[in-house]
Length: 200
Image 1 (spheres, rainbow, N blue to C red):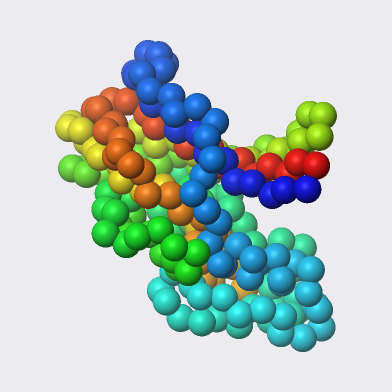
Image 2: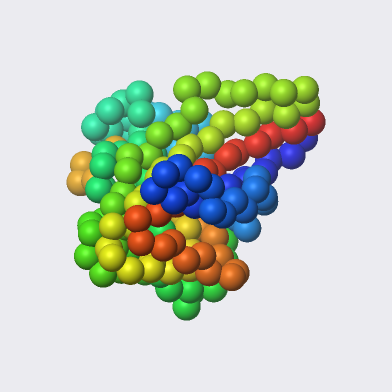
C-alpha cells in the first residue's frame, strides 16, 4: 500500500484552448503539517490532540472538538473567490528550498488585476473518492486568471488549510517549487489540481 501526492498544471487561453499541460505528475512532497492534521482527525477528541506550526510560524495547539467552529469539519480546503489566505495558492518566489518542515510558501501571489496579481477562483474538490482497480483518488482544484495586462511568473504552488478553531489559523500542507517556473500570459488562466492517491 502506498500514499502519493500528485499534481497537474494546465494553462488555457481566453478561448479555452490548452497552451500548457504538465500532465498528472508526482508532487514533490507533503509537509509535516499534513500529518499534524491526521493526528487531530484520528486522535483523542476529549483533550488537546495536536500541535502544528501555522503560516505565521507559531506553534498552535489544536484542542478538543468542543472548541471547533465547525465540530464536524476541523479543517477546510475550500474557499471563496479572491481568497488568498487558504486553498490552493501560487507564489512568485522560490528562495525557500523545499523541505518537509516548510510551514509557509515563499511569496504568495495576491488576488487582483494589478501588476503581478492573479484573479483567484474558489478552490473546489471532488465530491467523492474515485476507485479504479487497485487505486483510490481524491483531489481538489483551483483556477486563477491573469488580468494584469502583462505576464505573471509562477515559481511555486501549494495549499493552505484553514483550522476551524477560533481564532482562525492557517497551515501549509503541501508545497512544490516549480523548475522551470511557469509563465502565465495576460488573459490566460492557470488551473492547478492536487490529487491524493492510494494504491495497493
